[in-house]
Figure 1 (cartoon, rainbow, N blue to C red):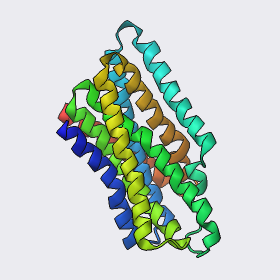
Figure 2: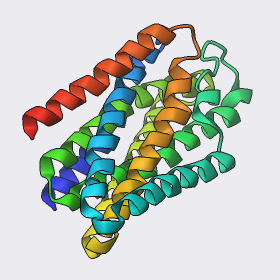
Figure 3: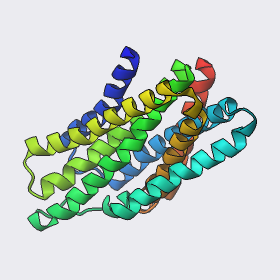
Figure 4: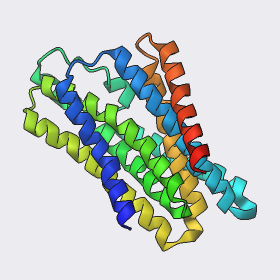
Amino acid sequence: MELVLLTALGVGGATVIGAGIGFLFRRITHTFSDIVLSFAAGVMLAAAVLGLVVPSLEYGGRLAPLVTVTGIFVGALCLNLVDRLVPHLHKLAGLDTETHNNGKLGKVLLFVTAIAIHNLPEGIAAGVGFGTGDVSQALLISGGIALQNIPEGMVIIGPLLAAGVKPGRTFLIASVTGLIEVVGTLIGYFAVSISSIILPFALAFAGGTMLYVISDEMIPETHSHGHERGATYALLLGFCVMLVTDFLLG
């Protein structure tokens, strides 16, 4: 339990670290942001497949294909429903951080809310990973999500400051989005701990949410500023780094 709690704090704390970096480098270029986010997408893709979808098939028994496929689509559909209720991250991530206009505050807060809501299923994915009993695999999943949270925390800072939010409050808002991930991690862990029967479905569900975020949010964002080639290779690099790490730890 202590390891799960530390992991939860680490996953959520990555957003805070990103926020700190965001204060140091308030004007982050699209090139840098796209490369880093694409690398994180590759890491998350490998974590979703190797750490969640494949174990779901292994623990699902004779109905494994049905359970896993169903779980993936249910997870994706749940996030699709969330996207209908809150703004798409890739549509709001391009907020003009150069213009100091308090009128933009409402749109900026919607952007931050979208990130916060998406952090919950990511946290659940990190917690569910511990349900298999494979600690190294669970830590790989959590590490992939944490890595993605760093640039996410970075991009929160600029728009909030540009909208006139004070630095202290800006940092607090960014920290709250990370705290939501901590809550999600604990929810995922306790859910599979209470009933191992739901483990295969929970793994696939978590994998589906991660795959949805990668395809619907991260890739479109990194391919919308003219850096598609570099973003693609960064994604492949992130995937391969995770693949090799999983092999070495396995």
